[in-house]
Length: 345
Image (cartoon, rainbow, N blue to C red):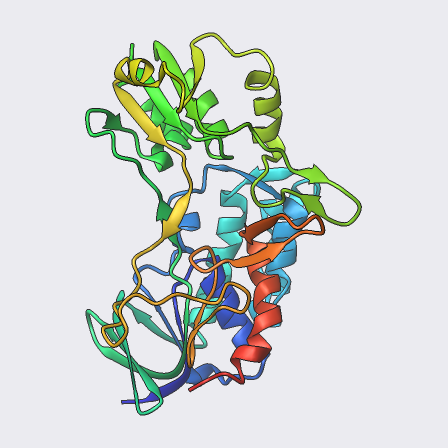
Protein backbone atom coordinates (compact mmCIF):
# COMPACT_ATOMS: atom_id res chain seq x y z
CA UNK A 1 0.00 0.00 0.00
CA UNK A 2 1.65 3.30 -1.05
CA UNK A 3 2.13 6.12 1.42
CA UNK A 4 1.50 9.65 0.23
CA UNK A 5 3.26 12.76 1.43
CA UNK A 6 0.01 14.74 1.43
CA UNK A 7 -3.67 13.85 1.21
CA UNK A 8 -6.35 16.48 0.60
CA UNK A 9 -9.88 15.58 1.72
CA UNK A 10 -12.46 17.63 -0.15
CA UNK A 11 -12.67 18.97 -3.70
CA UNK A 12 -14.47 22.25 -3.25
CA UNK A 13 -12.59 25.53 -3.80
CA UNK A 14 -10.41 25.09 -0.69
CA UNK A 15 -9.46 21.53 -1.64
CA UNK A 16 -8.68 22.65 -5.19
CA UNK A 17 -6.46 25.43 -3.79
CA UNK A 18 -4.65 22.97 -1.51
CA UNK A 19 -3.81 20.54 -4.32
CA UNK A 20 -2.68 23.35 -6.58
CA UNK A 21 -0.44 25.03 -4.03
CA UNK A 22 1.12 21.74 -2.90
CA UNK A 23 2.13 21.15 -6.51
CA UNK A 24 3.41 24.72 -6.73
CA UNK A 25 5.59 24.08 -3.66
CA UNK A 26 7.28 21.16 -5.37
CA UNK A 27 5.39 18.22 -3.87
CA UNK A 28 5.51 15.50 -6.54
CA UNK A 29 2.11 14.79 -8.07
CA UNK A 30 2.45 11.06 -7.40
CA UNK A 31 2.91 11.82 -3.68
CA UNK A 32 -0.44 13.64 -3.41
CA UNK A 33 -3.75 11.83 -2.84
CA UNK A 34 -7.09 13.61 -3.27
CA UNK A 35 -10.29 12.23 -1.71
CA UNK A 36 -13.83 13.38 -2.53
CA UNK A 37 -17.12 11.58 -3.29
CA UNK A 38 -17.94 13.64 -6.39
CA UNK A 39 -15.11 15.94 -7.56
CA UNK A 40 -17.75 18.45 -8.66
CA UNK A 41 -16.42 21.66 -6.99
CA UNK A 42 -18.14 20.86 -3.71
CA UNK A 43 -21.40 22.54 -2.78
CA UNK A 44 -20.48 25.60 -4.85
CA UNK A 45 -20.65 23.45 -7.97
CA UNK A 46 -23.56 21.25 -6.90
CA UNK A 47 -25.90 23.52 -4.88
CA UNK A 48 -25.11 27.19 -5.22
CA UNK A 49 -24.54 27.82 -8.95
CA UNK A 50 -27.58 30.06 -9.41
CA UNK A 51 -26.80 32.20 -6.35
CA UNK A 52 -25.76 35.80 -6.89
CA UNK A 53 -22.31 36.10 -5.33
CA UNK A 54 -21.10 38.96 -3.15
CA UNK A 55 -17.66 38.68 -4.82
CA UNK A 56 -16.58 40.65 -7.88
CA UNK A 57 -15.41 38.88 -11.03
CA UNK A 58 -11.87 40.23 -10.68
CA UNK A 59 -11.50 38.46 -7.33
CA UNK A 60 -12.65 35.14 -8.77
CA UNK A 61 -10.18 35.50 -11.63
CA UNK A 62 -7.48 36.25 -9.08
CA UNK A 63 -8.18 32.93 -7.40
CA UNK A 64 -8.07 31.05 -10.70
CA UNK A 65 -4.71 32.61 -11.54
CA UNK A 66 -3.20 32.25 -8.05
CA UNK A 67 -1.73 28.77 -8.60
CA UNK A 68 0.55 27.90 -11.50
CA UNK A 69 -0.61 24.31 -11.18
CA UNK A 70 -4.16 25.36 -12.10
CA UNK A 71 -2.87 26.16 -15.62
CA UNK A 72 -5.80 28.51 -15.99
CA UNK A 73 -4.04 30.39 -18.79
CA UNK A 74 -4.54 27.23 -20.87
CA UNK A 75 -8.28 26.97 -20.10
CA UNK A 76 -10.89 27.65 -22.81
CA UNK A 77 -12.42 31.15 -22.78
CA UNK A 78 -15.06 31.51 -20.08
CA UNK A 79 -17.99 33.94 -19.60
CA UNK A 80 -16.41 35.00 -16.31
CA UNK A 81 -13.73 36.81 -18.32
CA UNK A 82 -16.40 38.82 -20.12
CA UNK A 83 -17.98 40.22 -16.96
CA UNK A 84 -17.05 43.72 -15.82
CA UNK A 85 -14.21 42.99 -13.35
CA UNK A 86 -15.87 45.19 -10.71
CA UNK A 87 -19.29 43.50 -10.99
CA UNK A 88 -20.54 40.61 -8.91
CA UNK A 89 -21.89 37.56 -10.76
CA UNK A 90 -23.70 34.27 -10.30
CA UNK A 91 -21.57 31.52 -8.84
CA UNK A 92 -21.95 29.30 -11.90
CA UNK A 93 -19.54 31.61 -13.74
CA UNK A 94 -16.74 30.57 -11.40
CA UNK A 95 -17.98 26.99 -10.92
CA UNK A 96 -17.43 26.08 -14.58
CA UNK A 97 -13.76 27.17 -14.67
CA UNK A 98 -13.22 25.31 -11.39
CA UNK A 99 -14.63 22.15 -12.98
CA UNK A 100 -11.96 22.52 -15.69
CA UNK A 101 -9.21 23.07 -13.10
CA UNK A 102 -10.41 20.06 -11.10
CA UNK A 103 -10.28 17.79 -14.12
CA UNK A 104 -6.73 18.65 -15.08
CA UNK A 105 -5.54 18.35 -11.45
CA UNK A 106 -7.19 14.91 -11.22
CA UNK A 107 -5.11 13.76 -14.15
CA UNK A 108 -1.93 14.47 -12.22
CA UNK A 109 -2.49 13.37 -8.60
CA UNK A 110 -3.85 10.12 -7.16
CA UNK A 111 -7.64 10.31 -6.92
CA UNK A 112 -9.89 8.37 -4.53
CA UNK A 113 -13.56 8.99 -5.29
CA UNK A 114 -15.02 8.20 -1.89
CA UNK A 115 -15.96 9.71 1.46
CA UNK A 116 -13.34 9.71 4.21
CA UNK A 117 -14.92 8.15 7.31
CA UNK A 118 -12.15 8.08 9.92
CA UNK A 119 -8.63 9.29 10.66
CA UNK A 120 -6.07 7.76 12.99
CA UNK A 121 -2.40 8.44 13.64
CA UNK A 122 0.02 5.54 14.09
CA UNK A 123 3.82 5.59 13.93
CA UNK A 124 3.83 9.17 12.62
CA UNK A 125 1.53 8.29 9.75
CA UNK A 126 -2.14 9.02 9.12
CA UNK A 127 -4.50 6.24 8.15
CA UNK A 128 -7.58 7.50 6.31
CA UNK A 129 -10.46 5.06 6.05
CA UNK A 130 -13.01 5.40 3.25
CA UNK A 131 -15.94 3.20 2.30
CA UNK A 132 -13.75 1.64 -0.42
CA UNK A 133 -10.16 1.48 0.81
CA UNK A 134 -7.53 2.81 3.18
CA UNK A 135 -5.14 5.62 2.35
CA UNK A 136 -1.90 6.22 4.25
CA UNK A 137 -0.39 9.69 4.33
CA UNK A 138 2.24 11.68 6.19
CA UNK A 139 0.06 14.78 6.19
CA UNK A 140 -3.64 15.49 5.70
CA UNK A 141 -5.52 18.68 4.80
CA UNK A 142 -9.21 18.70 5.67
CA UNK A 143 -11.22 20.88 3.28
CA UNK A 144 -14.60 19.27 3.88
CA UNK A 145 -16.85 22.32 3.52
CA UNK A 146 -19.93 23.35 5.48
CA UNK A 147 -23.68 22.84 5.45
CA UNK A 148 -26.50 25.31 6.20
CA UNK A 149 -27.46 25.66 9.85
CA UNK A 150 -31.03 25.00 10.86
CA UNK A 151 -33.37 25.87 13.70
CA UNK A 152 -36.04 23.72 15.30
CA UNK A 153 -39.60 24.74 14.49
CA UNK A 154 -41.00 21.31 13.56
CA UNK A 155 -44.54 22.55 12.96
CA UNK A 156 -43.29 24.49 9.90
CA UNK A 157 -42.61 22.89 6.52
CA UNK A 158 -39.00 23.75 5.73
CA UNK A 159 -37.93 25.04 2.33
CA UNK A 160 -34.24 24.12 2.02
CA UNK A 161 -32.05 27.19 1.66
CA UNK A 162 -30.59 25.89 -1.61
CA UNK A 163 -34.14 25.89 -3.00
CA UNK A 164 -34.96 29.35 -1.64
CA UNK A 165 -31.85 30.78 -3.32
CA UNK A 166 -32.62 29.21 -6.71
CA UNK A 167 -35.55 30.93 -8.49
CA UNK A 168 -36.19 27.96 -10.76
CA UNK A 169 -36.30 25.44 -7.92
CA UNK A 170 -38.37 27.78 -5.79
CA UNK A 171 -40.94 28.21 -8.56
CA UNK A 172 -41.52 24.44 -8.45
CA UNK A 173 -42.66 24.66 -4.82
CA UNK A 174 -46.34 24.83 -3.90
CA UNK A 175 -46.44 28.30 -2.34
CA UNK A 176 -49.83 29.66 -3.39
CA UNK A 177 -51.26 31.44 -0.35
CA UNK A 178 -48.41 30.39 1.95
CA UNK A 179 -47.05 32.49 4.79
CA UNK A 180 -43.32 31.94 4.85
CA UNK A 181 -41.01 32.63 7.78
CA UNK A 182 -37.44 33.56 6.86
CA UNK A 183 -34.98 33.54 9.75
CA UNK A 184 -31.83 35.60 9.33
CA UNK A 185 -30.34 38.85 8.06
CA UNK A 186 -27.48 37.46 5.99
CA UNK A 187 -26.53 37.74 2.33
CA UNK A 188 -28.59 34.59 1.75
CA UNK A 189 -31.58 36.18 3.50
CA UNK A 190 -31.52 39.15 1.14
CA UNK A 191 -31.59 36.80 -1.84
CA UNK A 192 -34.27 34.48 -0.46
CA UNK A 193 -36.66 37.30 0.48
CA UNK A 194 -37.09 38.83 -3.03
CA UNK A 195 -37.15 35.32 -4.53
CA UNK A 196 -40.08 34.45 -2.28
CA UNK A 197 -41.90 37.72 -2.98
CA UNK A 198 -41.90 36.84 -6.67
CA UNK A 199 -43.96 33.75 -5.82
CA UNK A 200 -47.72 33.66 -5.10
CA UNK A 201 -47.21 33.73 -1.33
CA UNK A 202 -49.66 35.51 0.93
CA UNK A 203 -46.93 36.93 3.15
CA UNK A 204 -43.24 36.65 4.03
CA UNK A 205 -42.16 37.38 7.61
CA UNK A 206 -38.46 38.01 8.18
CA UNK A 207 -37.43 37.16 11.73
CA UNK A 208 -34.21 38.90 12.76
CA UNK A 209 -31.96 39.41 15.80
CA UNK A 210 -29.84 42.48 14.96
CA UNK A 211 -29.73 45.46 12.60
CA UNK A 212 -28.41 44.85 9.11
CA UNK A 213 -24.70 45.28 8.53
CA UNK A 214 -23.22 46.56 5.28
CA UNK A 215 -19.70 46.18 3.96
CA UNK A 216 -17.91 49.52 3.57
CA UNK A 217 -15.22 49.86 0.91
CA UNK A 218 -12.35 51.93 2.27
CA UNK A 219 -8.81 52.69 1.10
CA UNK A 220 -7.34 49.26 0.42
CA UNK A 221 -9.61 47.29 2.74
CA UNK A 222 -13.26 46.53 3.49
CA UNK A 223 -14.99 47.11 6.82
CA UNK A 224 -17.28 44.17 7.68
CA UNK A 225 -15.80 42.32 4.72
CA UNK A 226 -17.09 38.92 5.85
CA UNK A 227 -20.27 39.81 7.72
CA UNK A 228 -21.58 42.86 5.88
CA UNK A 229 -23.99 42.82 2.95
CA UNK A 230 -22.52 43.47 -0.50
CA UNK A 231 -23.55 43.73 -4.13
CA UNK A 232 -27.14 43.14 -5.23
CA UNK A 233 -28.14 41.83 -1.80
CA UNK A 234 -26.95 45.04 -0.12
CA UNK A 235 -28.73 47.23 -2.67
CA UNK A 236 -31.99 45.31 -2.21
CA UNK A 237 -31.73 45.47 1.58
CA UNK A 238 -31.09 49.22 1.68
CA UNK A 239 -34.16 49.83 -0.46
CA UNK A 240 -36.54 47.23 0.94
CA UNK A 241 -35.48 46.47 4.51
CA UNK A 242 -33.95 49.68 5.80
CA UNK A 243 -36.13 51.58 3.33
CA UNK A 244 -39.79 50.88 2.57
CA UNK A 245 -40.96 47.30 3.02
CA UNK A 246 -42.55 45.77 -0.08
CA UNK A 247 -46.12 44.60 0.00
CA UNK A 248 -46.46 41.17 1.64
CA UNK A 249 -43.20 41.57 3.60
CA UNK A 250 -43.14 41.98 7.38
CA UNK A 251 -40.20 41.95 9.78
CA UNK A 252 -40.25 40.77 13.38
CA UNK A 253 -37.52 40.93 16.00
CA UNK A 254 -37.19 37.48 17.58
CA UNK A 255 -37.30 39.00 21.10
CA UNK A 256 -40.45 40.95 20.33
CA UNK A 257 -43.64 40.17 22.32
CA UNK A 258 -45.24 39.52 18.90
CA UNK A 259 -42.76 36.80 17.95
CA UNK A 260 -44.84 33.76 18.92
CA UNK A 261 -48.03 35.13 17.35
CA UNK A 262 -46.23 35.97 14.11
CA UNK A 263 -44.54 32.59 14.01
CA UNK A 264 -47.82 30.74 14.51
CA UNK A 265 -49.21 32.52 11.45
CA UNK A 266 -46.55 30.86 9.25
CA UNK A 267 -46.77 27.49 7.56
CA UNK A 268 -43.41 27.38 5.70
CA UNK A 269 -39.92 28.35 6.80
CA UNK A 270 -36.49 29.14 5.35
CA UNK A 271 -33.43 29.19 7.62
CA UNK A 272 -30.75 31.59 6.40
CA UNK A 273 -28.79 31.60 9.64
CA UNK A 274 -25.31 30.69 8.48
CA UNK A 275 -23.30 27.53 7.99
CA UNK A 276 -21.65 24.92 10.16
CA UNK A 277 -18.80 22.52 9.49
CA UNK A 278 -19.73 19.35 7.62
CA UNK A 279 -19.29 16.19 9.69
CA UNK A 280 -15.61 15.35 9.88
CA UNK A 281 -14.06 11.91 9.57
CA UNK A 282 -14.14 10.30 13.02
CA UNK A 283 -10.99 10.58 15.15
CA UNK A 284 -11.55 7.89 17.80
CA UNK A 285 -8.12 8.47 19.38
CA UNK A 286 -9.13 11.94 20.61
CA UNK A 287 -12.81 12.54 19.99
CA UNK A 288 -13.83 15.81 18.38
CA UNK A 289 -10.81 17.92 17.41
CA UNK A 290 -10.57 21.68 17.12
CA UNK A 291 -8.22 23.81 15.05
CA UNK A 292 -6.02 26.83 15.62
CA UNK A 293 -7.95 29.72 14.05
CA UNK A 294 -4.80 31.60 13.10
CA UNK A 295 -2.74 28.82 11.49
CA UNK A 296 -5.12 25.94 10.73
CA UNK A 297 -3.19 23.31 12.73
CA UNK A 298 -5.40 20.55 14.17
CA UNK A 299 -2.80 17.91 15.11
CA UNK A 300 0.70 16.95 13.95
CA UNK A 301 0.40 16.59 10.18
CA UNK A 302 -3.33 17.40 10.22
CA UNK A 303 -4.57 20.79 9.00
CA UNK A 304 -7.87 22.52 8.26
CA UNK A 305 -8.73 24.85 5.38
CA UNK A 306 -11.76 26.54 3.86
CA UNK A 307 -15.20 27.35 5.18
CA UNK A 308 -15.02 24.46 7.67
CA UNK A 309 -11.83 25.91 9.19
CA UNK A 310 -11.76 29.62 8.38
CA UNK A 311 -9.07 31.99 9.50
CA UNK A 312 -10.08 34.37 12.29
CA UNK A 313 -8.65 37.86 11.91
CA UNK A 314 -9.25 41.32 13.32
CA UNK A 315 -9.46 44.48 11.25
CA UNK A 316 -7.68 47.71 12.16
CA UNK A 317 -10.56 48.67 14.47
CA UNK A 318 -10.27 45.40 16.37
CA UNK A 319 -13.42 43.84 14.89
CA UNK A 320 -12.92 40.10 14.41
CA UNK A 321 -14.43 37.97 11.63
CA UNK A 322 -13.97 34.52 10.17
CA UNK A 323 -12.52 35.02 6.71
CA UNK A 324 -14.63 33.21 4.10
CA UNK A 325 -14.28 33.41 0.32
CA UNK A 326 -12.20 31.90 -2.46
CA UNK A 327 -9.49 34.57 -2.46
CA UNK A 328 -9.39 34.56 1.33
CA UNK A 329 -8.89 30.80 1.37
CA UNK A 330 -6.03 31.16 -1.10
CA UNK A 331 -4.41 34.08 0.75
CA UNK A 332 -4.65 32.17 4.03
CA UNK A 333 -3.21 29.03 2.46
CA UNK A 334 -0.30 31.02 1.06
CA UNK A 335 0.37 32.30 4.57
CA UNK A 336 0.15 29.00 6.45
CA UNK A 337 1.36 26.38 3.96
CA UNK A 338 5.07 27.12 4.56
CA UNK A 339 4.37 26.43 8.25
CA UNK A 340 2.44 23.25 7.47
CA UNK A 341 5.29 21.94 5.35
CA UNK A 342 7.46 22.11 8.49
CA UNK A 343 4.83 20.90 10.96
CA UNK A 344 4.26 17.43 9.59
CA UNK A 345 4.30 14.11 11.34
